[in-house]
Image (tube, rainbow, N blue to C red; front, top):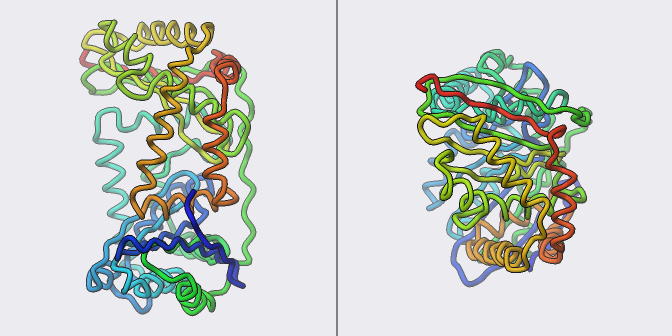
Length: 413
């Protein structure tokens, strides 16, 4: 368990405090409950774009990084489908600087034309370098479009197309900021060598005057149940064929999610996984193969992917993958196999608890799911799941009518 104190300011900001006097450092971690799922077609990529804008300065902080570096701090951020997370690490004696910086950009971010255009260029360049100019870089773009027909998960966090980013109008940007960057849509965690009473007073001082947003959240379209297998062939100048096969699965807080997590842990996590042992080490078709879930808040995807050896096709790879997965579904999961993945989960939980920043992020993340206590509740549930429950969920999820397959073909073969 992670010890914490939890408060809610009058404007709706949730404040969690995690004292740890074994260090002289402190962490400020703030989550805004906004990701690519909160975007509209034609305006995709706004949440990630804002991650960049938030470092472009605010009314009283012309240069965010410089102001932080002067007090020995460092910062970063990330955006995914469901949240945007900003974090600062600095000496605990300077923690009030983090309050000043974060509150200023929450209330009065610099949205001048120069900042807007500078960050637009940065994001477009990132889109090109990471997704268009990397081998297989657009694979998950293609997979999302194949798997989702209604839900905003059909585009990646970076945005569906560059033209969407190019088309952001100043009104789109200001509206997105006013709607989502408000105290009642945020969770602030302060962790480290701090006194809770002092932290709470700082939170009230710096964030208390910021008004909440009155904007209502737009309804997010529910994805219809998939009823038949979907396939997509895509050719590109890549070294070898690659295969991506995905199945719809429950969302983060739904029944069956943890069972799906364990399915992919057994099949595709690490060097001792079934896919690694049976497809990579014992065939000449797969150069690599793994399985994972996307961990989305709304119903997400269980994905199996792999790169082929030279001269081997994605189609023959899929047949071998299906054979191994079907064998897994039909056979009883051995006790030692289940114990292994549960031990891995315990080891990961222990490892994650070592770093202060990880504890702060964990508290913020699970609070936006509903409560910081879900962290321990979920772990206890996961480690209590039986082999029969996993097999039952595998049979329900891993069906051809629920599958979407991308055959990523090499033009060199």
